[in-house]
Amino acid sequence: MSLKIIWDRYILGKMIDFNKTGFDFDSAGEGMYHIISALYPICRSITGEGVRQTLNFIQQHLPLQQVEVPTGTPVLDWVVPKEWNIQDAYVKNHHGEKIIDFQQSNLHVLNYSIPVHKTLPLAELKPHLFSLPEYPNWIPYRTSYYQENWGFCLQHQRLESLEDCEYEVYIDASLTEGALTYGECVLPGATTDEVLFSCHCCHPSLCNDNLSGLALMTWLAKYLSASSRRYSYRFLFIPGTIGSITWLSRNEAQVPHIKHGLVVAGVGDSGPLTYKKSRQGEAEIDRVVSHVLHHSGVPYQLQGFSPYGYDERQYCSPGFNLPVGSLTRSPFGTYPEYHTSADNLDFVSPEALAESLEVYLAVVDVLEHNHTYLNTHPYGEPQLGKRGLYDRMGGKQTTPESRMALLWVLNLSDGTHSLLDIAERSHLPFGVIKQAAQALAQTDLLV
Ligand code: ZN
Image 1 (cartoon, rainbow, N blue to C red):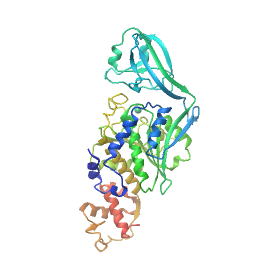
Image 2 (image 1 turned 45 degrees about the horizontal axis):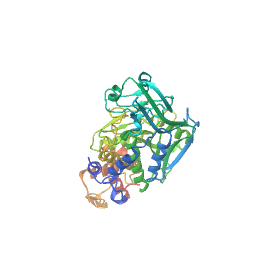
Image 3 (image 1 turned 180 degrees about the horizontal axis):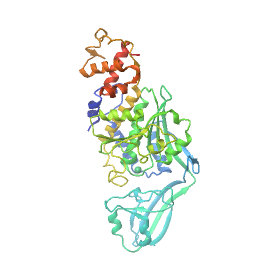
Image 4 (image 1 turned 135 degrees about the horizontal axis):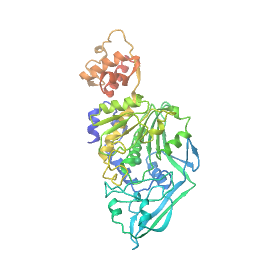
């Protein structure tokens, strides 16, 4: 599904005039896919050089600030862990052949493994090996962040074929006093009220879970940096869980400015768009995303909040209770490729990325324009014909839909209904309501 097709279906020129922005939509999907391809080989974790290399790459596109928080720093109920870095890792059989090689896939190493170099029999090695019997050709992705351990992940069929002999295991990794690194990009708007976008940047070679979110957020920020903004926008590229906890811990004064937010992840696969509501459930962001998806013409699903998933768990913890939902495609953990080597460059597509970006842009457009107006002629219907609004609006022939939108906006603009309220009540797309409001404001029927 091309971006233009869905845009025409939902927006039909009703939402944003992209020609004015100079934003090259045709290349958006390819551009995001290019970012994913470039970042795919890097071995990331919740700390270490992989995160820095990733943020350095994003910095070529965005004015991103890299923040380093030292190991041992208390953050809410947690502590910033030691920094993990890895150079190499392998398992050799008694012939000296590498039967598991980190250089072939960084998923082969249990992420955050402690260093090890020893020879041991298969029976002692096996508790340190992880595989997926149900998908014998895939390598699982496993971590051990908060419990010191070492291990290797491998294809189940390779595990099954291991001879009963001695093996040399080697993990050239380090766990040292260092820092947790995250990236932050703030685009100031007309107000200090903020929209937060947050993605995790801590997974190694996994495309949909992790890299698709980084790529989409980069393009979203690029687009918004070239647009006029009512809201300020904050983009966080952070390691999962400990990253959002660290940011929240360091930015308590900033938190009340966050009026809307989305956790961006899993936006490149072919599954239906999925919106998981914020803990508040009926926050403006929840209503906006539901409205956009409802009118998008593409398959989608809505889910209530649950205290599991991505970093919405932290933003929606009861003390913060921020209006932050999560907009993904296939929900995390529901597809077999999730957290395996099959979440690769073939699992994501430029088309799906572009469609996801488009929905995010439509959400931003509703947030930016969801004003509440007052009808200046509330006694009887004002005469539209003498103001040039009956047959034509904004230089275009009116349609039954746009005429209804004029009447709805006039009727409900009593100072208590936002344009989103009116769109919901009238069952018309927000873009049509927005255009009607703009035409009425130009003729001073709305203030
Ligand atoms: Zn994940």
